[in-house]
Every structure is written in C-alpha cells, then in structure tokens.
Length: 78
Image 1 (cartoon, rainbow, N blue to C red):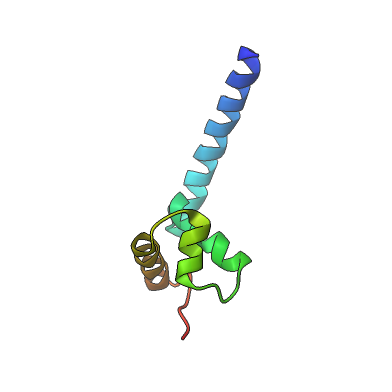
Image 2: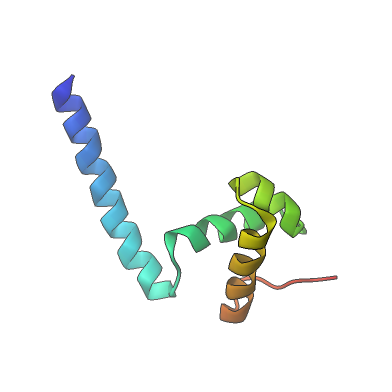
C-alpha cells in the first residue's frame, strides 16, 4: 500500500511540474486555468455561478476573472 501511495505522489508531482511549465508559457497560473476551464465548459456563465462552481467567494472570482480579461483569456459580455 505504501508503494502505491508513493507512486501516486510521484505521478502527482510530475503532473504538477509539467503543468507549471505549460501554464508559464501561457502566462497562466493553475488557479487561473481552473477559471478558464469552467468558463469554456459553460459558455455564457455568470460570475456568481463560476464562484459557486469553484467554491470561492464572488469577490475572489471577480478579481480572477478581471485578470483573465486583462490578459485576453476571457471576455465579459452584458
């Protein structure tokens, strides 16, 4: 059992390293990637729903989405 847990940990660390490299090339953080993913999966989603899906407060979601909009990853529509 310990060996399996060790292997799972090694895989998780490897994935983390790879994702950090990929995200850095895109000027994204892992957290921002989660926002982009949820928004792409739910076209037209409102900020409140994004916050709910990601289990963050609305202010946090608003700030994160504003940064993504500034970087050109998302576009707010009225």
